[in-house]
Amino acid sequence: MRHSDFRALFKLALLSSAIGATGSGLACGGVVDTRGGGGSSSSGGSSTSSTSSSGGSSSSSSSSSSSSSSSSSGSTSSSGSTSSSSGGGCATGNAPLVDTYCCPEGTSCPNVAFDDPKSPKKCTVDCQRLCDAVAPGASAFSCNWVDDNTLSYYCGACGIGRVAQGTPDCPLGESLGERLARQAYYERASVLAFEHLLAALRAHGADGRLVARAQKAAEDEARHARVFADLAALHGAAPMPLERATEEPTLFALALENATEGCVRETFGALVTLHQAANAESAEVRAAFAAIADDEAEHAALSWDLRAWFDEKLAPGERARVHQAHLRAVERARHDAAAPSDALGSALGLPAPARALHMLDTLMHALQQAA
Image 1 (cartoon, rainbow, N blue to C red):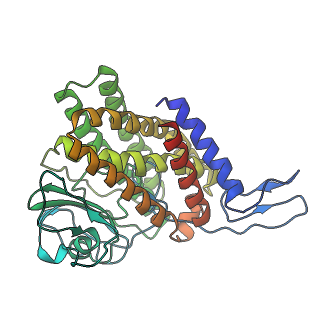
Image 2 (cartoon, one colour):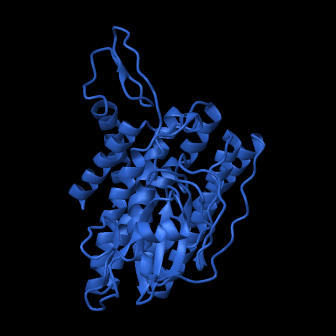
Image 3 (cartoon, one colour):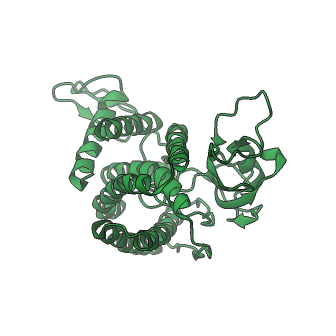
């Protein structure tokens, strides 16, 4: 899709949420507060404001600052990141199948790793059970089969935007500076994700325009990381070092990442970034999000164009699994968008839960219509 198409869709979603989340239209002379849960009319009605852990929605990677986890400590998966021992952390990586991850017979598990029809697996894996084991307290975003005995997982609020598999968690932070440093950290994580993608596009003979766009996206994210690292430094904080994953992801793993991280988290994150550019409390934070908003819209457009490219490369069973993973990611994003946030989330311009959910639903519906 064209960059301009996404800008138009984002404007539609923002305007629609400003009206739809309040359940009323714009009165003549009225003003809608895009931060809160209601509008103020010419008669002087007040509006209240709360925030969401937007997310994909609830954290911040390539496009918006997180408002969902607490400090990180605790368990480490067999091939993944250190996970959070309290609710809302982020953990990604690979884990061998353990019987306790299986959905009990006769039980309906809402978030499962889908099987390839040509390669039946030992059981239906409940992604939440897996996440409970590797990242206690973190809700399951998605999990997928890597091979007959290994699963990849994304648990908790791993950020809005592309987060490469195996990226270690960055604690949420308890000050504005720490939140901005976390933003910088996940911007850096997105650089790695785009570098993995770029290598795969070149290796599999992708069109030169896709390669160039992925290259630019990696460069964009590096610049975004510097913007937020500099801003965090002004508030007395610095991003923690980012460890590069040693394993190169398979084409199928990158297709799953694009369907969930790119077409959901990053896409919604680009929309949230526009909201933050208009609604963050300080001019310097608004300016930082405004500086990256246009780039993030282009990254969202790239994700949806890549979806078509991956479809051409994957086997039918793999395409079906990617499609199911995308649907689960949308539902996970809806769950995260409805979660409450805190005063720091409000300072960063995150939308209120009702607004965030309406923004997400409006955007995803428009994308389905345009696809």
